[in-house]
Image (tube, rainbow, N blue to C red):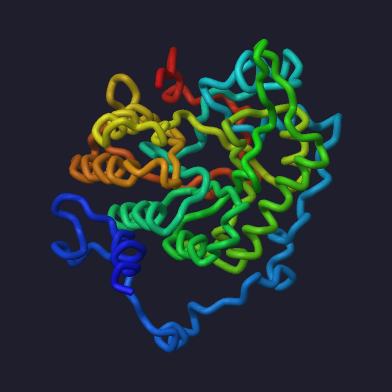
Amino acid sequence: MMAIKHQKVDNIAYAAYGDNPEDNEQNDSAYQIVSVQDVLAHPAELYQYPVESMDLPIEMQLGYGAKSITRANFRQEFLKRYIGAPEVGSTDRMLGFSQKELALADKTGLVKTAAPQTVFLTFDDWGNDDSINKLLYVLRKHRVHATFFVITKNMVHNPNLLRAIVADGNEVGSHTDHHVPMLRVDEKGRSHPIEDDETYRLNVRSSYEKLLEAIGDMTIEGGRPGLTRLMRPPQLAISRNGCAVALDEGFTYLVSGSGSAEDYGAVSMESLEGIMDHIVHKRNGDVRRGAIMIMHMSGTAARTPYALDLLLTKNDQRPEGDPKKFKVGLLGDYLIDGYEQRMVTPKDMREKQIDF
């Protein structure tokens, strides 16, 4: 019993130099062992799983907003609702688009209406208590929130963990059900779809359904749902058919990002923090307004919470008015009805080259 406690419960706490539950009473990342009776004494935290979706607002229900994409309107809807990535283009991870669509598709990965000094933190995939809990602690510590793009295939084994993410004020989007990208590249460099349209449709539809069953009843600050209809394409790869299917299934925006920390391959916490800093700041040191940073919540990204803590600590220490001091926003507050990614990129966001 004590071995289980030590190996499966105690190790979940965030413990860094000078910041662990034993030395810092403000560090609330440690888990406690309580009785079932203790849990049942807090009825406000109890819920039925799966959540009864028919009790939710119609705009959250499965199928709402679906069947809206046609051949005639795909181009305009895609260009409005695709937030791209600087490294994704006509020769890399895009399949089936016309030359006109390739030329017009977003490559900034920026939220163009972001408030001054505002950037966005996002996490991909899925993990366990010992990886996700540390991220949640760091976000709580610095009083910021993030968007978690979840692979739902294994999420159903721990819906409580997903609810913990939203209970902390964070929002959730889809990273599909089983993380199959829209395309693959063969040994000759040619791109091909991996799943047919109907299989991919079931993939993205089931991802939203599983998220809805776990957190559909939860709200965050401002009273809006913690579950969004945002989707991040696996590997940031997109195909024309795949995007049409996702949008036709009711997803409102397809969100890549302006830079990936590639934290699953980080060699040190310091180098990872440097990459993160480079994503949220321009070469001259000013905040890259509207930047979307891509990180991961899986166990393979073990250095991520520590590097993020360092980045946010340095930011907290900057004085107000410092052009390097950034604020953290939530994508769901900006990517709403009426937002169009095809708007002209604001002058202060333009860069000759975004080099990550």
